[in-house]
Image: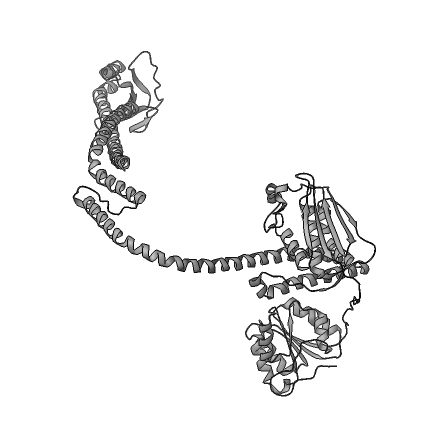
Length: 633
């Protein structure tokens, strides 16, 4: 604070001195210039007065003698007299060492400053008539004047600042001494927790008020310290309870974040084959075989994505931290093929060599085909990610003692021995330097381990060290037999009919595409894009089936269904809700509003045809006026 007070005083003084010096310098230079102008003009006027007769009598010698009188003014370096017609009549130079340059003709009357010289032109008058012009050129020593003035101001400024520093040094003690005492006592109170300390001495003014207030504050704090200690003991118990609740909340929040990160990781994987299938259909529209293969792959991957989106609807899994899986008989080659579809594009993009070795006989495991494919694709993507371009990846499987052993080996960067125990933890990656270039959140291996454990299996990592590749071995129990495995049949593409069908959805692309497909099958279709429009269309159209979106503009699907149920002409219309909300409470809200069916987006044409054919499970009769239409057999 001492330094700051002194600096503040010096800064204030410096600003004041600079301002004053600048003002004085401007004023002095202005006065200096005006004095020069006045002086040189006066000299020119004198020369003009005494030289008028010489011009009248054409006496250049007399004119030169008049100009020679300027020798007593050394600042005037040159002078000249011009006749009335502008011709030089007489000239003068102060020193023979200098060769002045005289203008060929006189300029405008008045003064001018250029090139460090001041020039004056003055008229020579005789009997009210201009008979000539006087020209004077003087050295204008403005820079010398500025330098000398600045030197004087600098000396004055330095002296003033020294005096100000000495004065501020003495005066600041009156302020800093009591403040230093307050600071010292405050520091001792913090270190010793002794609130009986007081600042000694008394001061007047605001500083004295501050010292008294500080001492009073210490006294008050001392009185309250004991009360706070007692309150702290009471709060300790409450904090223990709060911390337990906070840990539970943090655990739930962490599990939610892990779950969302896992789903985000999974949702990206099916996009590559879907995009490839679209490219195949776009680039080879005439190749029906290639288009059919692409369609099959896209449908399979779309089912995987739909399954993953369904996981988001089950909020209870976020609270429990559990992922449920379906248990069905799955053939080894089937889920390995699905995994290769997901991972092959990335492996080929890295120019890796992939070797696959599987048992020729069929091997069945009990589990979720989508999850098993996700496990293997995660391991393959992990191997491709941490292997240098052009590496080698091997996928092999074998069966022994009722256990299926799957191995994914690479010749990549390997894993440090100290990392083998942590490699399956969330957000852990093998190489922090590589992490910045490969992206990803480090959830793939953690996801794989959790899914394997849900299937009753295990997964372990092996590596001989950095730069020597790695191997992940997955073990799953094998089913004793393949009994009960039946070929999956595709739903029938045809439904009974034809029917009058109302489609209401604000997703124009979706509803127009479904409507076009239904029209090609012979049905009569009416399409609406908002609730009010659908209500008016239904009254005039009297549909057999109405597929209604819940989130319709102007009139939502629930209110629209209630309004349709109040119409006597529509008491036999089958109402089906089509929505992105798929929890049980959403289904119940739809049934309470009068819907007989509930479809969760994305909806396929097969689901709609199943409803038209009366094959959709989970349908229930309407609750509105009249009897509900019986679904077609």
